[in-house]
Image 1 (spheres, one colour):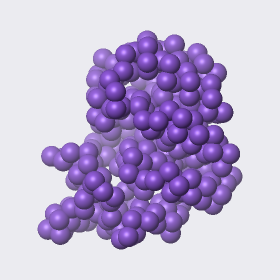
Image 2 (cartoon, helix red, strand yellow):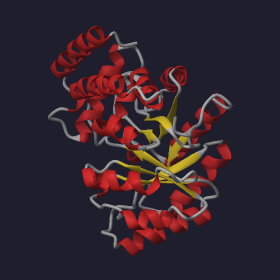
Image 3 (cartoon, rainbow, N blue to C red):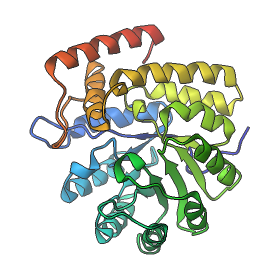
Length: 305
């Protein structure tokens, strides 16, 4: 069995539940994180799935403080600090570490196109000034830039840079990155590509960051444990199930549309309401009905809990 690193396992990029008037729904936050804990998963709040780009800074502080205080000693809390303002990312990271997060993650500032040199300097600056562990986050779908693996490898030598979450859809890149870091005890590779959870873990990745884990956390916990136990046949079956579930809200939808659809699925099992923040919009009433029907069917098909 592979030795489990500090930053490993199932880290769910948590949706941020909202009330109808756009406030963070803390009652639903509790329900969702309790479900994560019950299934040995960890919350990653204020990421892409969590609509962090649409949440005010003051609300971010209140949110992180609430989660860290409420679940102190019960789970590892990860938080996003991505911003086009490097100063804001640093200030947020410092505050979040004071609240109790175990690490912060940041994708590139994305208003300006960046040269690899700029990318390197950004993460070095964050690592030097943030005051705690940093996870480099590569998501080309929103930043429209790809962090070269040689840059990540150089950054991995910094004592405060502890991991790399990669959401880029590139098979060669995935294979190369796992080979680079699978044997590094001080640096974790985390998969942000849902259809590659099984394959990546089987090849030596340390953890998965599946948005569908918001709806069904247990299935990803089962997948991860199957890999740890070298039960690859079982893990392959579970992977296919996760893809069937994910298709309900992801198929033929933009990321911005999929987040609203995911919340419809979560409402159907009593985890939160469907509200998203502008510029995102809720799905139509008819679409919500169709998603709910498919959700109920998949719950019965795979006996989900």
